[in-house]
Image 1 (tube, rainbow, N blue to C red):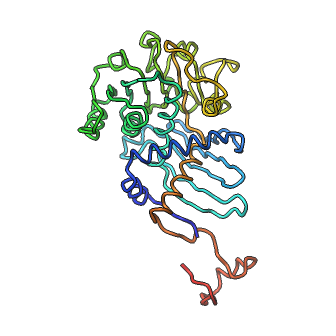
Image 2 (tube, rainbow, N blue to C red):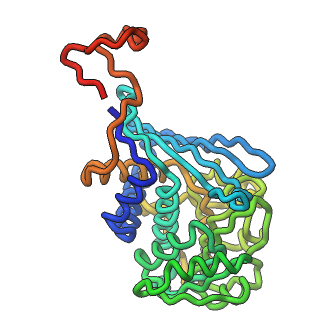
Length: 348
């Protein structure tokens, strides 16, 4: 049998654990798996692009587990009452190929993205950072805000979105959240001015210039989340050229990240090198650091592993017969025969 987690199940799981706990614990699962970087089979995600969006498959595996995620990105969906990003994923046993988990991953991806962002900032942001500009106030924004508060102690979050209703939604959702002070900014420049950390999480599939060089101050950490496919960026090229750039998986980021604007030999560091202590993150208090985050399959592997562990512990979800369970494993045709109770076998 396969554990099945739908949207209601995942919502119940997060509610019972608490979102802050989920963010902190998932960040630790991600950290543990980045420490095992060389244990994984890795590849850039497989993408099917269309004029208005993209559909992607994201696989990763080690010697024990195989994971994949199906995810889309269609910014115009909101005009039709649909989410921009929708996802589901699976976790399987490498030795047998048996599917262990089939799970929603829309909410899960929002949590793992925010957890990854805050985890990276632990290595890259200045110690004592307390303020963050949050540019783009859509579906990911609440998770980013809470993750940075929980994992880094961010107290003030300055909000800006081209859509005032998105900012109003974010402010309403986090109104009264303990320890977070929200400030609505009049422009990107207004939000960014004096911030320790700047997170960009916009949705448009375009080569945008959300941040320009004159906005960037010494010592800032930039968490660029929205640029995640070819032809979709958020930062002016000069910012990328001058910053210390950290990516998740260089072959994928060269295609999809902010560094798609740069020459193929431009210097970057992969995140796993920071996690295992091979390379320092921030080199000085004045250095501008950039986490050029596009989302990588190992993070989904970690997220699915976490969801399965917590679902079992809390007895959340259901068991489904996703693949046949036969008396005779060589007789698949038996499934098409008239139903006859199998001796010693309880059917779902």
